[in-house]
Length: 142
Image 1 (cartoon, rainbow, N blue to C red):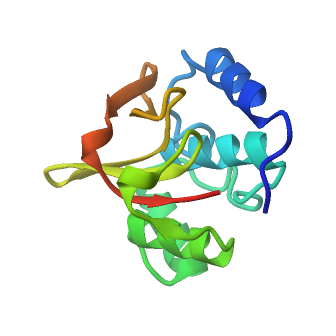
Image 2: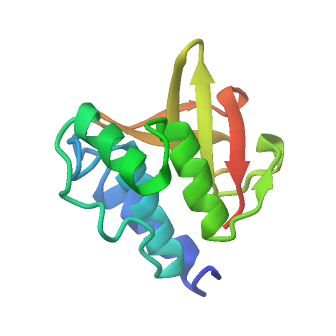
């Protein structure tokens, strides 16, 4: 899977257009946000068949268990990226648009490296938010 020639401007436009989109399970959650970014950058939809097929965390975990063999969102995402042939890289090597997992204590978020490559962008209840790059614990290159 390769990045489109215009991926940088498409990525910028995507983030601007969706900066205030609120979190909704199965429509605009952290996993679908990352899938939408990947689709914007590459043209490939890794979440086909997942969209609108769940509406809660419980339903998402059930779907992930059925599809990927684990109710863990983190393990399922890692497996999906592996199947998509995204090499896992050290978080410090992640570039703009690369998917990452960020941890703060027991909480984790799935996001992408931001516009300047120094922050992680993620979907939350009030739209897109940023967390420091230092919270990134796993990353994949697309």
